[in-house]
Amino acid sequence: MKKQLLFVLLFISITIFSQDVKIKKEQVLLNNIPIAIVKNPYRDHYEYSKLNGEKIFQVDFKGIMQSTSPDPLYYLIVQSADGTKKGEIPYEVLVTSLNSERIITHGLAVKYNVFTSQGIDTNALDKIYEKGTGTFSDIAVQAKTDAGEINSKINGITANFNPKITNTNEIIASTFGSAAKIIGRINMIPCSAFDSKSCVSIYDLDGTLVASVKESKDGHRKYEVNTYDGKKFFYNSKEMYTPSNKFFAQELVTRVMAEGYMLAHQAKNDNEKVRVARIDDAKQRSVNLYGIPGFVIEKNGTKTEGNVTVYFQQLDVNNTGEVLPTEVADKFGQVVIVKYLNEKNQPRSKTINASTGAQFCVKTSTGETCYYGLDVKGEAMKKLQNLNSLSFNNSYYYELLYKGRGISVFQDPVEKQKLVIKIDKDPKALMLDRNSSDKDGARLAEYLKDCKSVVADIKNNSFNIREIDNLIQIAKEYGECRN
Image (cartoon, rainbow, N blue to C red; front, side):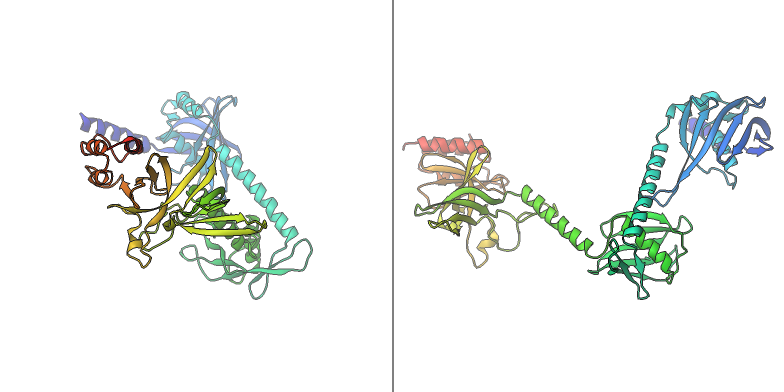
């Protein structure tokens, strides 16, 4: 059955596309049989009638150049004789011919079934009208708007900057009547549309390749321009390209400037703005603290109020997801900086290491968040690479989640799967990694061994020790424990 259906579809397809559509003395011939009349009263407009002369529909051929594509936009507007119904379809070349009238008529016949052996099929036309307009005409309107805007900008560049090319290929321009200054240089080499290399390179004063240009394969005097920031546009030049054609070079530079690339030091300044913006974005996404009001309490009880800064992670400027070095020792999360005013109201700053056992708090929208400097132990010790370096420092600041009687629960600010529990009786805290293979909580049970009831429940797997709420519950019961 499937083979029969495939054969029928193939037969229909071959039959439709093998129909011989011709135009002879304004008559549309289908397999040499007259079925309709077509007239071309003016350029790119075609009117189709029955053989008795009754006009049924008309077609307008539209074409416009696009600055964002090497290909012109060609399409057809098909509308009823009275203009009340209208639809748009792409202009497609489905037959070898130099005659647009025949190409359009052939396409309407073989693809849209508008012409049959019975004449013009109005039901087929209705299907085209159902598509409506806007698919192509909106693009064309925007392309015309863009072309008008770029022409206006070109005129503005010419009037205000008057760019010129010197005999040494330097680009000079003036600003509102001031003396002309060098803003860049242009390099032009022999090439053709079939070369992969660029014909023209435009550099600014910092040596940045602002724009490279090559001849497009899709049209005579059509050129593709690629800019340093990844943009691409196409344009048709009034001049024929040769490496010595200064008029071509001047037209090109004017067009590049009209697109907003003003040479001089613009690219460097733009890149710096982008770099700063990326850094600002990375800061917003990070857990680092930058000059947040708060205070630091040192191990000896000294309290310093001021603006607190801590770098818990490296900035992920390029959104790679990498926020901590994995192969080298570092000090992320190990140091807090507090800037304050001394008794003489003069600015001062302190840098305090986590290894000193200090703590600090910062103000938040919901109150305050506190961090403690802790040295940890356990299989999932933080920053093992630091232990292998000369620093031997594995003390970091951890965010306080819960503080009870003789016990506290903390969380790593960056690697939030890492939870830390600290009892006052032990100088070191214990780290629990929720991604670790710690199945029975043996290390936690050993750490909290002076509370038998809690230890028993941990060994019986009554708690999922990798969940924050469960770890806080353990801390609460430990604080109430009396052995």
